[in-house]
Length: 287
Image 1 (cartoon, rainbow, N blue to C red):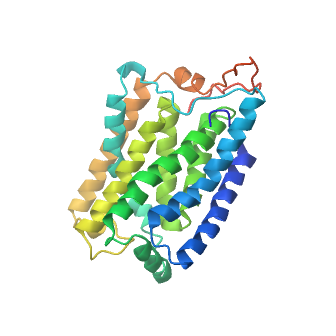
Image 2 (cartoon, rainbow, N blue to C red):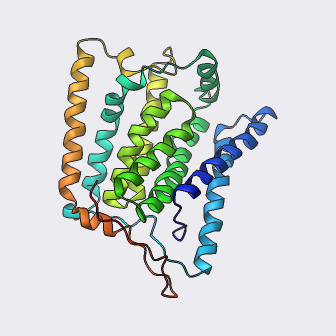
Image 3 (spheres, helix red, strand yellow):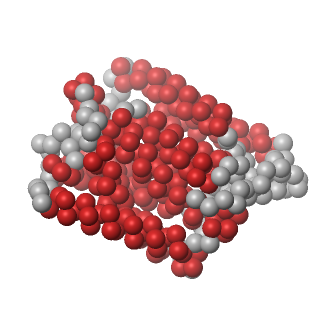
């Protein structure tokens, strides 16, 4: 899909295709299909297949491309420290977002729907859907396709925030949406700095798997439960302070490890085999 570089309009088309696919797969659910992993996979097929077909068309036209995954390790000389720092920061970033996301309580109807969707009595199907398919498919769509396309033609902060907004929109509810917006911005920034799709997949996997661990560890908690429901005061306040320190340290370490020019140039459009490009230049502004 490296030849497909969607802008504003085509990114929104992908969102429409995603929701159209959701309507189609809702029919499967009504027909009695209970496998969340199957339903989710079918939903994601629609936008990803559209992107693949568009990429093949652009390739045949001789248009330029940007690789989906082209890891840049910066001064570390290895991606291992970057992975470790980003993954470590993930649960603490989620904790920092809670004071905002907790203001948007799920309705009883939505909570019941999520409890039915995330049925812990089928752990294997739940793990495949939430920890395997979601990180792979959503990162491919939101970072590997949309953010990459926007980075090839817009200022980095515009591309990062827009792809984070799309990521939030796909979740379909306010509480998850605000959390996804914050996490999506972080993953978009990591993708801009590293050009590593596997790094953002690892972050996404960590976030989703920790959520499942919480579900199984505290089965009596509601779907919209937070760390505040598990950690008593004053320890919760201390936990937030520690989280802020860890996230700030992670951002500082990654920021100082990368030369912004290197990060930007990694998203420049490269000529196809025929020597043609789309005529776009990657912006040089910093995030």
